[in-house]
Amino acid sequence: MPDPILHRSNRATFGPRAGASIIDSVVFFVSLIVPGAVLFSLDGALPREDVQSCLDASTGQRVLCQPLTGASVAVIALTVVSFAVAYLFLWSGELIGRRGVTPGRRLLRIRVVDIATAQPIGVWRGIGRYLIQIPLGFCFIGSLVDIFWMMRDADSQTIHDKVVGSVVVRDPR
Image (cartoon, rainbow, N blue to C red):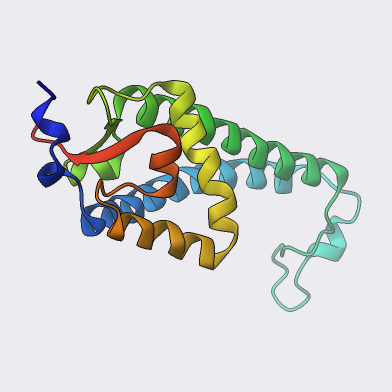
C-alpha cells in the first residue's frame, strides 16, 4: 500500500511553494550579505598608495573611489564561486536532497520527497533538481512554464520535479 503522504490530496499547492521560495530567497541572500560585507570591508581596509585621492575634499572622510584591483576581483570571484558551491551542495544536496526541507519549506510545512517512496530524494537528485531549474530561470518564460506546469499537472509537479522524480507534499510533522 502506498504511503498516504503521496496521495494527490496531500500535494503542496502553488501558494505554500511560492511562499517557501520567497522565505528561502531571503534567508539565502541575508546569508550572503554578512560574509560578503566582511570580505569587502577587509579588502577596503588594506593600505593603498593612493589613499589621499580617496578622501572627500569637503569632509576629509574616506570614500569608495578606489578602482578594482586584482585582489578585489579575486575576492569577488572567490565569494561568488564559494556561495555557488555552498548553495549547490549544502542547500540543494543536503537540505533538499537528504532532508527534504529548507527553512521556508519547514516553516510552511511542506517537504520534497521521492514520488514513489515518499523518502528524501538524496543528495545527487537534490543537486540535479536545482541544476534543471537554472536554464528555466534564465528566461522569464521558462520560469512561467515551470510554474504553470505545476498548476496544471495531475501530480502537482514542476518540470524539475518530473525530471528527478520528486514531488512536494504537505508535511504533517
